[in-house]
Amino acid sequence: MSRPNEEVIFYQEETTRVHQDHIILHEVGHILAEHEDDGDTGEEFPDLGPDFPQGLITRGFRRTCYTEDYEREAELVATIIQEWAMIIDYVSPRTPEDPDLDPLCSALNPPWGWA
Image 1 (tube, rainbow, N blue to C red):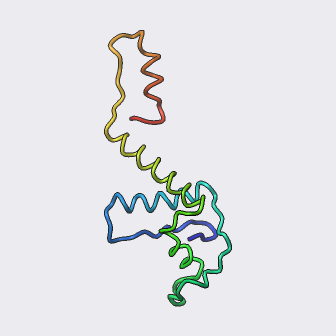
Image 2 (spheres, rainbow, N blue to C red):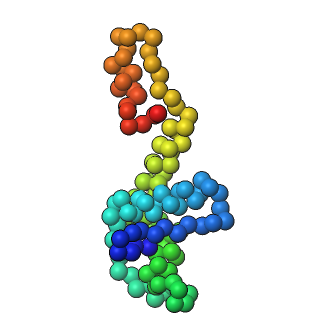
């Protein structure tokens, strides 16, 4: 949900931590890709009362539909970030015993990841 100075991400409580992380990263994918609301009025969705703005309800009910390009893009962003984060936990940089291999190890162990 977008607010003037912040983004609020709601996620399912009754699921695994990995799934919660994926839900959050999916929404971050929408934010990073600067996806805009398609202007759908949400009339086909139920009225859940005054505490839930219709735009929030509309976006919430679209969570399981990946037919739109921007939904697939957000899923891809979430998957890439989540896989990268999992790999970092298991891979440690290696230092060569032979100093001549330093350039090769530097290329394979970039400073922005793997540590």
